[in-house]
Image 1 (spheres, rainbow, N blue to C red):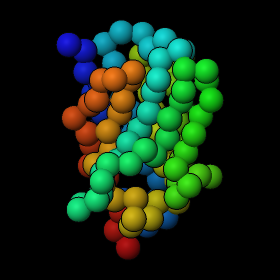
Image 2: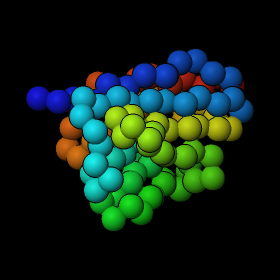
Image 3: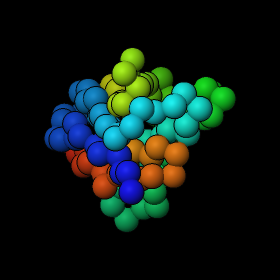
Image 4: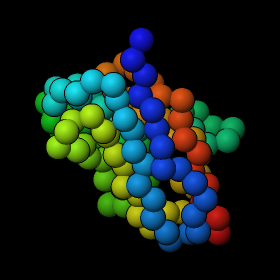
Length: 111
């Protein structure tokens, strides 16, 4: 069963930037649901950014204006550009392609 694979996580200082990438084993159709979720320690998993089948994007209020979800021209990678990172952005970030979830990549923002 195909599973997305995330990369790009790490430790960054508050105010810094990171770009997460998610590779998939087939071309991602523009009609596929694509998203990034995250789970902070002791908290429920939450949607961070998503692209719906109709192409509309949606962001969690806490990241709006700082994060951008986008794909590549080869249509095999989904990325999440994260700017102005805050300690509360710390967590494990998961990529979702249709209904397939990756294993996650850790993002830690130090103050």
